[in-house]
Image 1 (cartoon, rainbow, N blue to C red):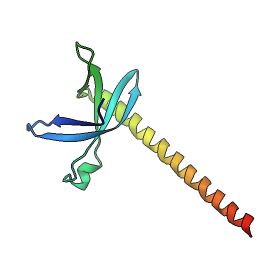
Image 2 (image 1 turned 120 degrees about the vertical axis):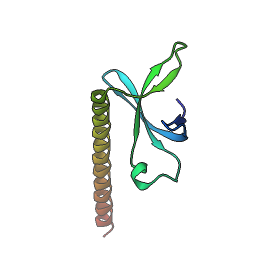
Image 3 (image 1 turned 135 degrees about the vertical axis):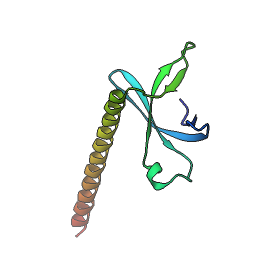
Image 4 (image 1 turned 180 degrees about the horizontal axis):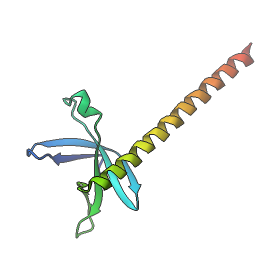
Length: 109
């Protein structure tokens, strides 16, 4: 998959999205996309689009809307859980770096 895709909305307007991640849930792959255009409102900028990755008859990857609300909720929850875990890891890493810096300063004294 490319890092940037162009999608057409229900009004026929084309918008560019960046693929920020691909996750696997229950044996299926899903692309997480965010708008690339800077003209989006702050509210829209925080919204990710989740599309299922399927294959067409020529075995090319295609992005497909998730029409089942339960499937969409399940994938959204998995994505949020991944983000929370990454955020916790980042906080842990930051904490360890601060401790290392403090210990280096103590060694210099």
